[in-house]
Image (cartoon, rainbow, N blue to C red):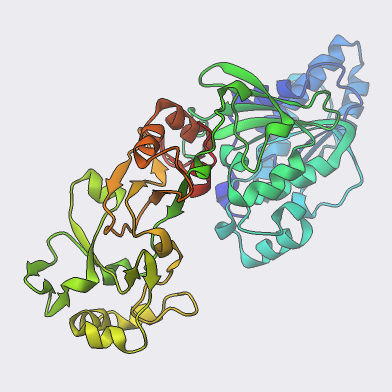
Length: 471
């Protein structure tokens, strides 16, 4: 397995993991598993707690030794780390004057480990490996054996979570230190459905970088096979506040907010939010600031004069932020806001300059994974174009500090970000209202709750996130 998964859990979070499931007293006879144990930093704490608790309950060293061999399990796929783990556990025995234990620590792949044992506790920090980082055979194995990973580009830890839940005893509890993105990613939807009957608590460290070399925003989630209430206790560990959220309120994405904080009007009922055009080869269509010269009949790029009728203004959140001016070749037209494709041969006949210019990129244009009916000179995707010939707003899919909202004219064809138009049956709210809503502190707070954390303090949002905002 990729060495990237070997990110070991800091000591204070080990304590939090164990405390969160109540691994604190009367531990003799209760089985615990750490299924990606690395060099044993979690298991070392487990063993010491076990010994201390047994001593407090008056158990002899012989009984403690036998209990350690029966109750504590670890799995580690990397042989080097497995050996370090055994060595570190033996050091705990030596410090406590306990004879050698036949540890139930196994050098194996947890996902392929077959056992009928059920555990009262499962704790851990599963491997942080994305779908694209898995070898093809690993992708196929996980897809074939875990229901939460059948569709889409799952993270490797989804399978660990599913198997762990299935390995819990009827009264079992588990705590995992996992990426916070699990609660929001599109491909994590099946996992969230699988977890929802058991999820009891989330301790979110969204403003804390737990691992020195990892940009992943993390949280501790606690699952309980005998959850007593239909509530999720959510704690923002950075802001030091907590709320109880009804399990029924957990939707497609898990949005952690008090019911009283949610508005009554859904943004998407009044406005349509769409991702912008996808040319699939921007270098062929976008005429960068400084790369063209405007003349009476069009725009000169290199040895070609591109006809004015087939060029439009274009914008992105980035060009607007840095006040750059670009143009885009637009190989379509509109008839009363309905997109019109040129007939075969018509575009080449009407716009020989644009045709010659695009022919410079012909090899790359032909290699695109375009829509089936797309002509060679058209954009790779045309779906976003149908509602674009209107006044609109533009926002970025990545938000760092503030939500920047820009007004665009009807003729403008943006190629990055998301655009917002007023629905035709909406007579209550205008684009001015939409701008006010999107620039509000409440929407900004929502974005940082619903968005998927990426590098630094940035989050990524989707058109569906914006449409689902309640104001």
